[in-house]
Length: 190
Image (tube, rainbow, N blue to C red; front, side, top):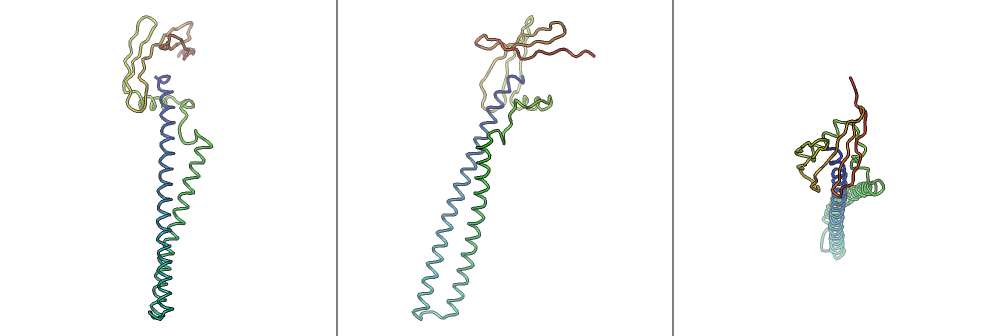
């Protein structure tokens, strides 16, 4: 079952990484659009300040009103500038993550070829295979897999099993009738 799941698990893991990259890029785009909107608000504040200053210079408003309005506008502008700095920091962090993914494509997804512990293999098999129907004829084993989810290619496993001189040999018989030796190990005797 591990031999059947391995290519599927690696493929799905790569797809999950691609999905993460796409999500991060969408978040970056959203934050960049938000920055553009905030910059527009800052420009509006600057225009308001110019109008207020014009009113004061034309003696239409008092100095106290001018000072209060300019302070209010400065506070509002400072809040927007802090938001832009926060968004830029978040964008830089996300771009750093994207760079890491680009430089190390196996960095955040599992390379299942490197999984060695039996317990972990069983978990992965259970994630992708719902059921396996096994039939045996002489020294051939036929396994039909029912998969749980993910992107999979339905397959039928046909294997040949031999015990020769205390050594277990298992060959997978592929659909094109080629044969791959997938297990060759000595039985442990207690």
